[in-house]
Image (cartoon, rainbow, N blue to C red; front, side):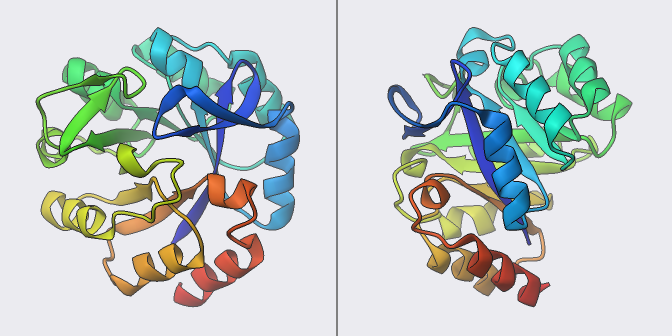
Length: 243
């Protein structure tokens, strides 16, 4: 299982939101590249980046911070937030982003997402952000009529790298991963799933591994790392043992 430390960007700073609310942002650092280097030095093998301002604006807003990070830290990066057209996808991939995450676009413009998958197989992650059973879009500010599984099934044969499943109600709240919903999405969609939202400590990593669901390929970890509730070395050792 891959552990993805999260670096969420707002105004060029490293922040964590509470349940996706921009007004409830805790600042954890002024230098995203330095934070990425710290995660690299701790032993993480991937990074998960989100341009929060971009997610609301519909276009990249923290490009400078992302580019500085890519220049400094040679780890594979998956990036989401405000990526709504092929030109933006291809610009980020050309700059060194390993995978891009398409969330709002997956709901509003599925043809674009399928074309992105066709052009860049294995490098497109579909973000499935659910609140109260329905997919949320536009930085989680708006609800759609789609369920998580309905959205996933749109892309069952598209060649996506993975689904990034976030329970919005748990994100940043240290409420624990929604194990049941994550496992059900992996099982019912037949696609690789990355869990996100609510990791509070080592018990969440243990819980995901205990599911023994081969399609759960990783988990995104945010506030628990920043607040010291999850020891990086212990979590990475657990993931290595399971592998």
